[in-house]
Amino acid sequence: MEKITIPADRDGVAYLYGHPLRNSLSPPLHQTVYNALGLNWTQIPLSSADGPSYTQSPDITTFLASIRSNPKFVGSSVTMPWKVAIMSHLDDLTEEARQAGACNTIFLRRDGETETKSRTSYVGTNTDCIGIREALLQNSPTGADHFRGKPALIVGGGGTARTALYVLRRWLGASAVYIVNRDAAEVEAILAEDKLRNPDSSNLAPLVPVSNPAVAATVEPPVAIVSGIPNYPPKTDKERRAREILRLLLGRQLHEKDQGVILEMCYHPVPWTDIAQMASDARWKVILGSEALIWQGLEQARLWTGIDVVSVPGLVARVKEFVTKAVAERSKLNL
Image (cartoon, rainbow, N blue to C red; front, side, top):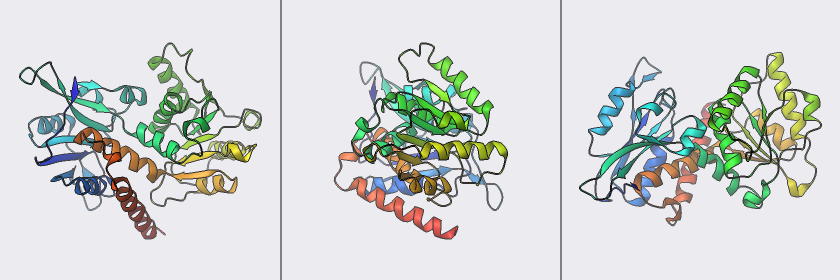
């Protein structure tokens, strides 16, 4: 089995599948990559207008039939509401997709011993794993050593929490992964899914719900946090309780050399959230969620082009410059 490398002189079409897509930075991010590589490629948002401020994407069967019959197809980003539903329709899934429980990327793979016997497979993966991993590693004082053998924390109970759990275990070597969330049922669902995916979990860092401020005040402090909740002030008692638990954990840094690193995945409509400010006040290093966007997009480009895009001189800098400007401009519009 081998990854298909698309000839550079061939026109290529990538898609962005899901809805709504009006505010997505994915197409211009990928265009920045294609321009840097000199490729005559583009990424097209695959949706149509459904009212003045909403878009609607085609159903999965229509979408897959379209890409399978398109000789210019090179790959696709997948977003809500299809990230889970599409998995059972693909030819194969990577470990990242299985462990995260969601697919955000489709790429092409050739199966077979010879060119004449080969078959093209449509494979689902989850590059958000790479986005979270690289955002943390690229911005930590000592790379993976800063996190290895120490606890980490996940805030939230959605898809980001599931993806972060895999990353913190697989690549960062966390000794335990705490989870703080307003909804106990969501936490129970994550625990149950984790048990099904990893029936033999003896070698995995335990997933530990923290729902009591008294426990937060006594557990070993985390050195890494991935926050995956919207930037809304807490209103209910459960939300205020979860925020207080987070505040306590943020305040328990013991030494400057063990400075905590928090990845705030929420960067829209504004990149600097209430949680980012709270972490900064507690002397944590704050990484904006746009960093994860950059690295997951670069991983998609690598899968689709067959090129180690990160090693191309100046390419990462160009993508970072674009994303930084785009996020800043959108933030101004929402002030």
